[in-house]
Image 1 (cartoon, one colour):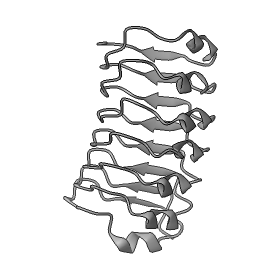
Image 2 (cartoon, helix red, strand yellow):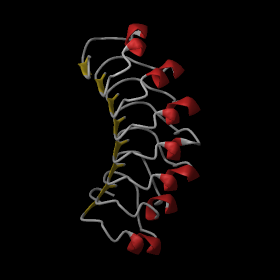
Image 3 (tube, one colour):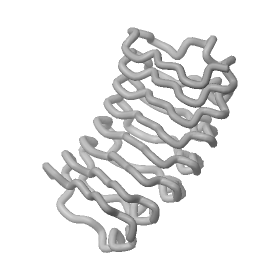
Image 4 (cartoon, rainbow, N blue to C red):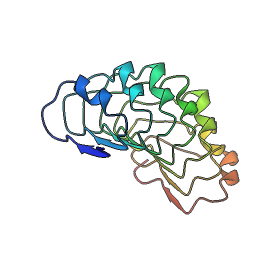
Length: 171
């Protein structure tokens, strides 16, 4: 019956395999540990809606990560990611994404398929041009591109009709 599990700040180096048997889990917070990779077995948690892997040591995410079809909230801030999986856009129900403080200078083309995304925090990644994929996220209400190296935004940003907050500080 466990729905929410908080294992933040426990010096864990991996996601404990026993967790993959908790089928009804909706929220998993593993922030502030030393996790370097996410095993494909995470897909066993197919009802997971909220996943916090911030402040870890993630280097990559495999394509199987995008099979988390129920995921609505994903926090990956302050890791060591340099790329997102090519099929990342398959996370169709994602509404909130924090990928700040990584090394993600590029987004995969599939990113444009995140049509339910409302909030994107993409700050502190060393981005020097704004990705056209973001212009296709029509439900976006909040976009944080602060602490990058941007000098201009594409004209296509005018299509972001629902945008209420845009942060471009320290570019």
